[in-house]
Image (cartoon, rainbow over all chains, first blue to last red; front, side, top):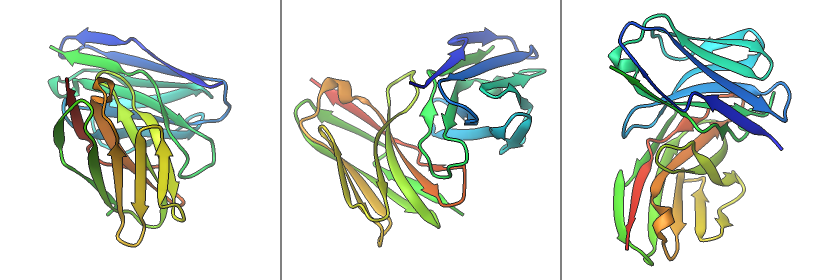
Length: 114
Length: 112
């Protein structure tokens, strides 16, 4: 069966510090991968998605970046965090090549920028 | 522009009561519609999925309906339980796109 992991589960970082969140998927190959952010009481905002290694599409211009160094690894980074980067970050995967397929979400990372 | 609107934004009900959540969408071309349940501090989990030809789908006490003509869906929860307290998110996928459109969710609180 497929599983998706995210870490860390919670993170408190000062403004201006770097960020690295990691997501890995097990039990499937060539998945589509997604990063979402959810602000308190708000809906999910798509940040990045990837349909293959090294292929990253950005949906929202910001100080965040994403990379996919391996087929089932997706990393969200920032060189300098802003207060507005606080939120709940969710990684998700879906079946490769299948548009409209179900997205499976990870447990999330709660980021607080102080 | 593809959009998904959910109502109400929040809802409080007593344990054992039924409730219905609404979802209106303007997504084209339509592929499928999902309802997700998101517990606080957790990732969303899919409850039901409906394609164009389906108008009802059940998952235990959860029943989703779809009217593709009016582009409306509802999620009916029967005999609510405290564990139903969560955010319920309507998600519509468009044919040919890897990016689904998310509603902002309905926050449901079930009180004993």
